[in-house]
Length: 398
Image (cartoon, rainbow, N blue to C red; front, side):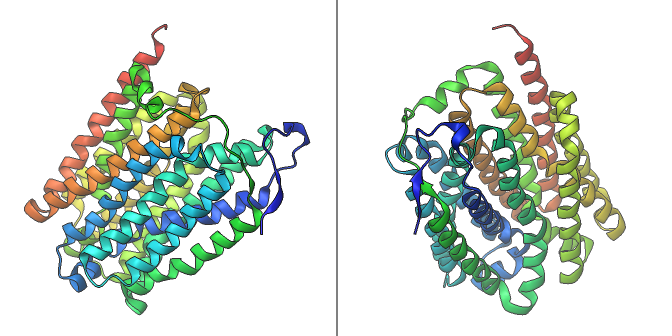
């Protein structure tokens, strides 16, 4: 059942807002993020049961990133032909199916198919999320609604990895993945009941997002994002094997350390707002520089549990708020082309996650954690330099 009303063409001041739909989308975001990064805490048991290397298991994140990139670039011109409600429901159904396929995967190939389905949902949902929220609530309530939506992101990022690691000891990695299926089904039903009809409006051309790269500040900013998230996920994807093999922690301590990253990340997300209002580009430069320093410190100090815990807390504090910073940059750089810019941003981030996981996996299998973390640090330093160049380009007239 859906709400028998369409907000299209309705005067903004006469809308009260479909807040039930916003909360339903928030639950969907929670399940989506939890599903996307669940493999980070489950690489070792997945690799063991499917008889693959941990680097190959890490490609479960890479494959979802590939399909997320393709979908984020194509969803706007394709979705413009259909009611947005229908598109969002189809994507949520695909997420539910992905969870079932991954949980029951008999081999590596089927696992990757399930993760590819998840990638389609990731790219499509995130590319459409901001534009959809803008059609669900009055203009004055959009910031609040986006904050609610991103709350699902932050909560999932905080608890998904440590909870997955903890539950795996009791129900196995398949059981952990299956746990998200009922939540996805609830999100689907809730959206069916709460999302109003949202008819197709104007359609963006297939090349619209790429034209934005002709602007130097946009091109440099996207390049900075690319290297930032490549460096981040070259390290973060292979954190569990590092902590088990180098730091020497068990499952319970591993879960605690992942929780430390999440809690510190929540704190960083709450604190970054005031800094962004004052010195946006400085924050965008400092974040990857600090992350690079932490990555290099883990190489030297990673065999000590106390030092590792402190470094991982610092990592969470500065790395988790990074998307908030770049989202603010997008709203200021492309205020009138946010949907096209949002699709490009999602594609850039997912491409970066894919490349980072691939490069990290190859290096981890071939040369160990030192090469993986050192390469991650180098990529992060490049991101800091590109952010500086983007700030310079933004200051130029025209």
